[in-house]
Length: 449
Image: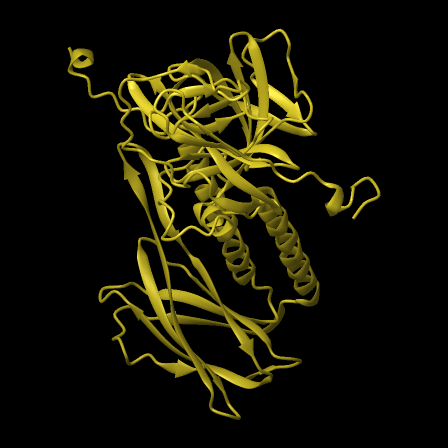
């Protein structure tokens, strides 16, 4: 406990007072005695002046029906931000946008030592709200601020609308009235929302922070389950809590690491030639009868990659070579096949070509030892004589694996960024600044005419 905080015994106890409604005689309990300005009779819903000893009626109604009762009953106590609060008031408000009505609920919470704070709920989305302790910094030339700075955070304008009070219950620290109109402006910096309310020339700033329904239910020990949240709310934090910028920074760091590893292996790789020979496939030589093996060559040093390159003088033709790299000492073999094909010609668009006269393949992680290649070439049945050469190199750099690594690292940030963009589009689609549609397809028959 700090030196500025008086001991608990010295703090005043909460004062309540039981009275009767002057309209219907129903009992009324003032929980925030001395601080509430209005109280609503739960029986006849008359709005009474809480400062008047006789509870003067400020607004009365012949008939009030409420098929939308509070989710948190009045009188319920719970703990918010580590402090105990009691729900003493309930208000239902609405706005109309494009002839569509939207309703939300506001709850007045009271602690005799901490004062008032509020909860708002719209379609399962909750906010813990308090009056701002200092005035946000805005452009005073604009009646509706497009941006505001509050305690070092920048808030962007989300929506401005005229709200109407439809129903009130309980006690309020202001003079409430059913049918009252107010202009509301929300600016957001998720998970917080900065709101300004203008009523009869008076302006009140408040700051809210998003809360999940389960947090509210746990705080007030409510039975059952909270209503499911519908859609994306204006200050709802993204389900992808990871900062997109940080993900891309992490990707860049790992990509630089891969490039450094690639550069290191490139320096070590000497692409040492170990075998070279030339062969030919005679015209019309039958398939399967031209299999042969090369002379033995030695692969020295550590386990490393081996590159097998094939070059052929094909033109508008092809040759396919079945290879087997065989360890003479152990019998271990690596089987693979490669095709060399090249076609060219002319058409209405000019000259064209396809393929090439050279091909190479890398066999990774080949241990040292004595090796030879079994070769079985194939070609078209009416092929001309094809001359081809074979080159084998030891310890060549392999770039494909680094490319696969970079692509694998790239997928998570792309996915997270995409999901974050979809989430933000859903959020801003409900604002005064909806995002441009990704696809703008006009199907109007009038345009066709």
